[in-house]
Image (cartoon, rainbow, N blue to C red; front, top):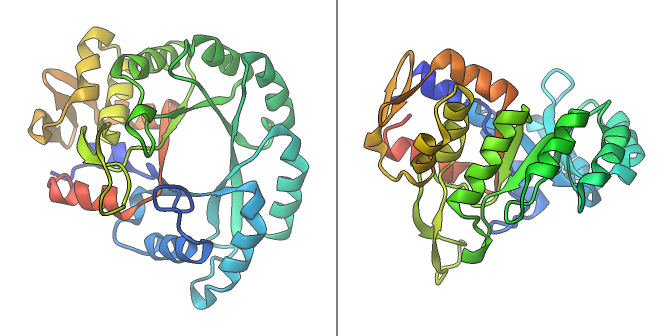
Length: 295
């Protein structure tokens, strides 16, 4: 089923967050994995390497340890850093020292109140693509509106390692509608290891509990459907879709239960709206895509 439409939806979609739970890999292991993925057959789906500010020096050392696989100025790694507005000078100085191996072009941060967002934009917005985490359990509209006013992006948390970390479909849809209406691009993180919604283990422990997880196709295809004008009431059930057979993928678009988005519309949506999602595993989502015959 792999077609230009599906490839457009998936291109550079997965930001690798192997340092974070539930994988929580060492820096050496996460860097070795990312190096493998950047040259693997599925590298088209790989986005940025995500790292906390406090571990930047550790990242630089691990890159030096890659030897012949070390990134270069002609093929640097794209890196997203978890940092705050007060860390702007630290990030800039680090990037200046290590520009031969990585390009830090994205900052992911948090705000407790929409009133904090203009200061974040002042400190970071001129140099970086900035994502600010938006709460889903409370009304996200004030945050989305504040981001729209200063040209920053939103980040939503779509799960975690416990069942109660997953927002409801109504909460996710409320955010997606606001994002589309206000023209605020977003990324997602947590709980999106699989293409479609279903029951999955919440961690990699042998005795891990299962929970209902969203699929990344559910989230990103729903966003594209909303952007082309399909009504929210019609798109909302897509967030809970579990059947791969419900997706009709052709070279010119994807149709889900009578709603269609073209390949060109998907490309625009991925550029201006639905950017990427962070996953502590790159292999798991890609393997699932292959097992569902979507690739």
